[in-house]
Amino acid sequence: MTIRLKLLRRQMGWSLEVLAQQTGLTKSYLSKVERGMSVPSIAVALKLSKALGVDVEQLFSESHNQVSMAITRAADRTPMGGPGVNDSGVESIAATVAPKRMLPFVVHPPQDFAASAFKEHEGEEFLFVHKGSIEIEFPNETVRLKSGDSIYFNALIPHRTRSLGRASAEVLVVISQDDGHGA
Image (tube, rainbow, N blue to C red; front, side):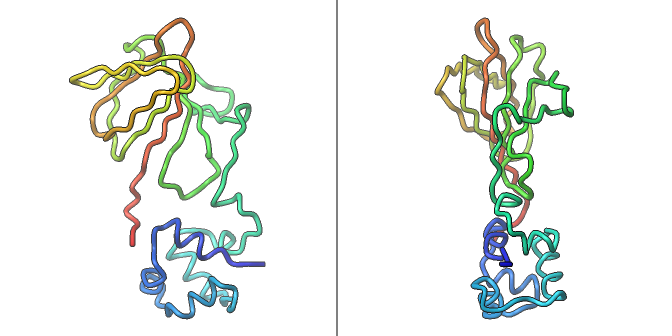
C-alpha cells in the first residue's frame, strides 16, 4: 500500500512548504512520506486528508483512476440531468475525477439561438469543434467555427452557441474552475 500524497498535493498546486503550513507537520517528514520512507499514523493521515479536502481512503488508494485519471468512452458519457435524460444536449465526461479544476463535457448545440440563452460564469472556457459547424455569439460579435477549429475566452463575457447546417455539431467544452487553491 502506497500513499498518494505527492499526487494529491500537486493537484492542489501546493509545495511541500504549503502543505506543512496547512497541516502543522514538518516539510522533511512530509517528504519522507511522499517517498515511501515513512508511513503516517492515523492522526497524521486525518490531518493530511483534511488539509487536502479528500477522504482518507484517497490517500491510500491502490487505483490511480480514482483521483488522477478518468477514461470516458463515447458510449459511457453521462447526460446532464441524469441517466437517460439528454434534453440539454450536454454530456459530462471525466465525471469520476474529483476535485478538479477543469470541467470537460461534450455539447450538441441547438440549431437556433432562441433555444440557447446567453451564459456567463467565472473562469475561462475552451471550445473545440469535433464535428460540424457552430456559431458562438458574444454581445459584440458572432464567431463561426468549423470542425477542427477552437476558441478560448474569458467566460465572464456573455456567450451562447448554436449548430449550423443540418446535423447537430459536437463540441468539446472545457471550463476552468478556480477553486482558490494555490501555492
